[in-house]
Image (cartoon, rainbow, N blue to C red; front, side, top):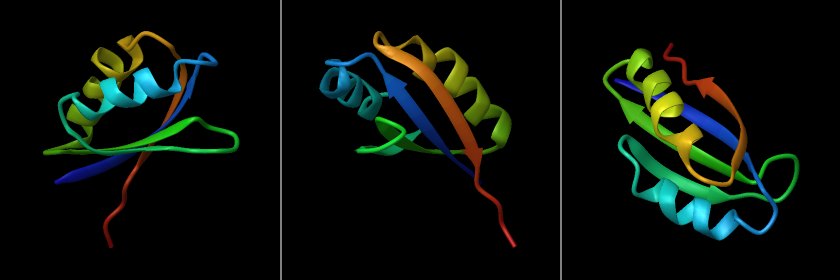
Length: 77
């Protein structure tokens, strides 16, 4: 199992609509609106990191209002 976190910046005024759309996307386990350098953080769970990368490119970055993303891959000890 792989876990990824995606930090997302959106166009001003689209925070709520992007948040609602994110919650319905494949592999999204959680979404939280943030205050600070990023507007949202989304937690993804998938079988592997390749699937997470594909979800970011094919789904998250395609949501209207998304300006920028930064993906962080979870690590296991």
